[in-house]
Length: 107
Image (tube, rainbow, N blue to C red):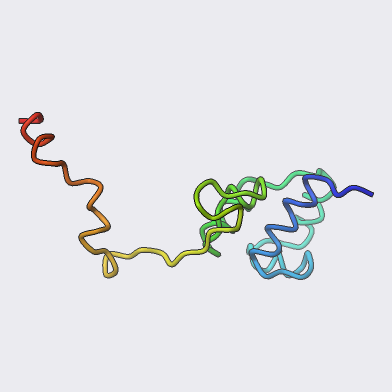
């Protein structure tokens, strides 16, 4: 039997959250287990779950939804530390600084 897109998507969410059961997933999301059962019945993952898991566990929403990540990761989930003001460096903002010629054009 072929696995549905829904089952694949739910499995990626469970993997990212470290959940081995629907109850584990419910705990990770801070919801009641019947909510997971209802999503299974509808065969639809609420978008809020994707957003919450992506943010909380540092994985790509593209990976959770489609099994791929846009960028140089080769389809693997993107896990990265969250940047905080204490960890920002000048290179964090390097893309923002206009070149001399661009600054002259803006003047």
